[in-house]
Length: 527
Image (cartoon, rainbow, N blue to C red; front, top):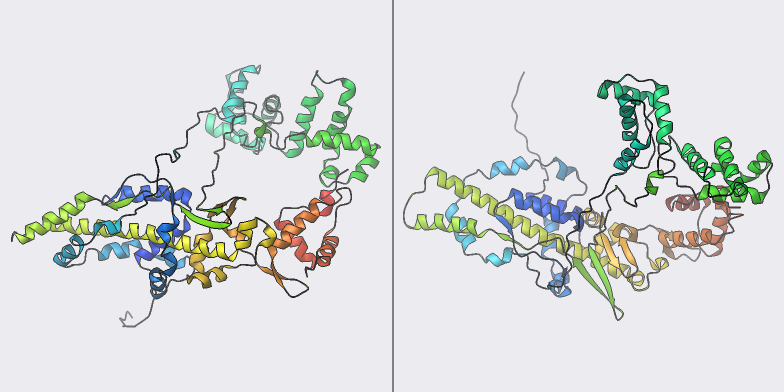
């Protein structure tokens, strides 16, 4: 039986302004420009002023540390941790409320009498000498086009074999490897080109493609890529036959003893091949000269992959011993409310004063204008609050890790977690996490990720707490200075760290070593 009941429940939802701010906090400066362009296209009431390209000076934030308005309002709004509230929020809930009846006259009085300049994003310290932020577009041939041009050098029997070769080349990935099985290429030819081929035909064409430049292209795995390159070196007529002995030995190691080589069982290799340590060392030197990713040896020097540039969100400059923090806002243009939309509201207000009644279409237009102007104001305010929140968070990190930013010594990094910065700034932990995510700071010691400054603590034998980053730095130095013929095991590394006063377990050494991308002792061994 269907029954209706009344119930009361308390829920917590973020306002549209809070949602907008949280989403803006998450994106780095490099993508902020694109987000602003999207908003400009979606909201005609928002317009871009004179293009800005520079840094926000410290004077812009001279009263930032005493300004608790935003922090207190954030606490009062009850910002919740996590993404669930933001992701589950339905934008249509708010859009539907905009159709509710409002008192337009009161709104017009409040808005038109307001100081329009308060909604501008004023950044005044730009000069005509600022660098052009446009990136030139390089026109270049792709790696696959480079391979296709070499098809003309093959002695192909007919058009059918040419289409098979094109299919094989199209299946080669950006590293130069053929990852697809021949049977899969057979299926691709049947469904895509209506060509019925056999695996033997695919393999025959593949062997021809593997003769292309760069050496090793078309290999199906690392072992085959290395062997193809060694074969090409062995066929080089510019190298004397007697000088090819290490190359031939290297080819034999790769083709017949690849597992022993990859696991660095050098003693076993010497015994199985009946060779001296010197011979093995020369062969390994030849292997180390090879390219594990053949496509990176593309002879024209062009790279088909897009170059990724890191745009720092913050810049720290050491000025005679004093650290100067600036917020990089080169991708944040000056924004304001469109003057034409304000004139429309003034026209409607003038009509009301003259006693003329507005028709339904005019009222709907005014409702639309009001909605877009409010959205523009919220977005401009969100950009301002984003800058304030980011600056406040980075300033706290700067003060917390002051010794590192002065010296650049990673051993000076103090243990720091999100809660430490949240307690200093008064922000929520989730807000600090959003600021630290995908953000970079430019220092005189290089561009660093904000996340790299956060670390757990490790207690020394004296009871002092140090950052795990400090331990990792010392561990890296120890491994870098070890005897590569007899690399140190995790147990020996643990003992050396304990001798320096760090109370650490062997499994913790192994965990830090893996996080640093350092292999085990056996794989670090050299002849």
